[in-house]
Length: 153
Image 1 (tube, rainbow, N blue to C red):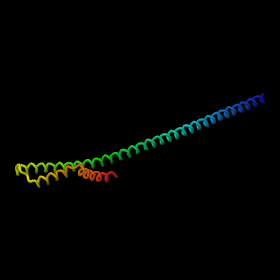
Image 2: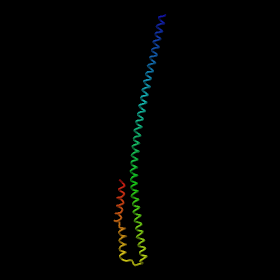
Image 3: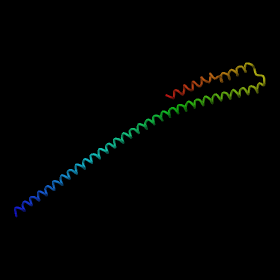
């Protein structure tokens, strides 16, 4: 019986060894699976970050394009504003000149009565005619536009 119990205990040790080897293999397989899942999770996170970087770069490019467009628009508006201010100044000057002519004509007719010398009438008429001539106005407007074009570029 002693030999039987020796084989039984030897067999039980082998069974224990096999059981431990089996558990060790299961643990090893489980660890490999866990490591594989961890690598996959890490790869997915990296892919997600790459996609987010590409999306943010696209948004950044769109914002830069919008800024450039708005900057160009602002520059154009400022140039147009300068043109309008120059035209206001020119028109104010013309209005002042016309008012001076009207005052001169009114004061001349009051001072000299009904009799105005023919030479003065002729000269006043031609000064007013030259001032109101649309071709003369185009020359002034052309100079204003040329001045404005200098600020456009």
